[in-house]
Length: 95
Figure 1 (cartoon, helix red, strand yellow):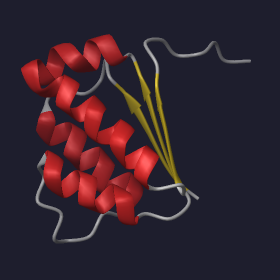
Figure 2 (cartoon, rainbow, N blue to C red):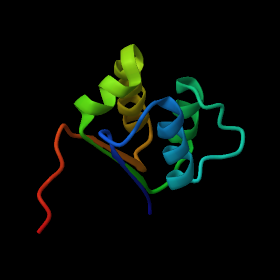
Figure 3 (spheres, one colour):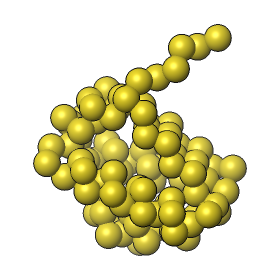
C-alpha cells in the first residue's frame, strides 16, 4: 500500500505539497502539479492512503485554494474505492 502522511504545519506552500504527494504516492511524470491533474492521478491509484494532519495550518499555508484541494481529495476518494483519504485538524497522540 502506498501511504502519504502530510503534516500541514510543515507544508510551506503548493510546491512542497505537490513534492510530497508525488514522492510518497509515486505519481507519474506527466503529473501537472495542479488540482485537475492531481484528481486524475488520484483516481487511478490502487491501494493508497492519504492522511492529512493539521488541516487548519495547511489551509493557511495554501491560501484561498485550500478548500478546492479538500474537495479534490474528497471527490477522488469517492470515485476511487482503492483510495482512502483522511483529513484531520490534529495529530493523534503517539502510544
